[in-house]
Structure formats: structure tokens, C-alpha cells
Length: 98
Image (cartoon, rainbow, N blue to C red):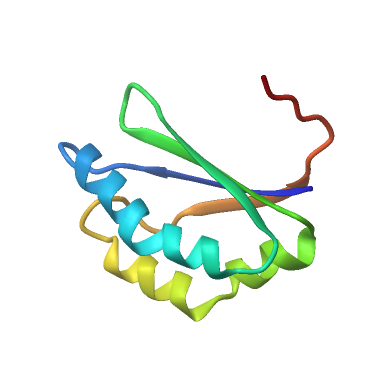
């Protein structure tokens, strides 16, 4: 399993709008990209957030990262979070669930 980690800052007062952008703009792209497993977005107390998007493998994560739809969604999201977004990728070395 492979993870794309995206970090950014939510603009003040835009927390609810950010959740809607993620649901309407990004989630459909995640779900249409082969190899998508799940996405988890965590908001911090000072408006920062981190998204952990899990993929079957590195190729799937990179396919999403280079997807023109993702780039368009980022362009549509400038009202809710700062750009550019910081992204990094890594192999998941441990995972557990209830």
C-alpha cells in the first residue's frame, strides 16, 4: 500500500467549505482512479490540514497526482486553501484497524 500525504493551510473561516470541496471536487476523482483505497483528511487547531490518501501502489498514487482533473480541482479550491500544496509519497509500513 502507498500513501500520498498532502499538507496545506485552510483559509480562515473556510473549514466547512473545505470539506465540501473535498467531497465534491476531489472524492469523485479519487474514486475513479484505479488503485484508490481510502482518504483521510485531518484538520489541525490552527487551520492546517493533512490529507492521507491510500493507494494500492506507487503507480496508482502517481497516476492520481498527475491527473488533469486533480489539477483542475486544485485550481477550483483556491478560495478555501492556500497554494501551493505540499505533497509527499511513501510506502505504508504498518496499518491497523478495528
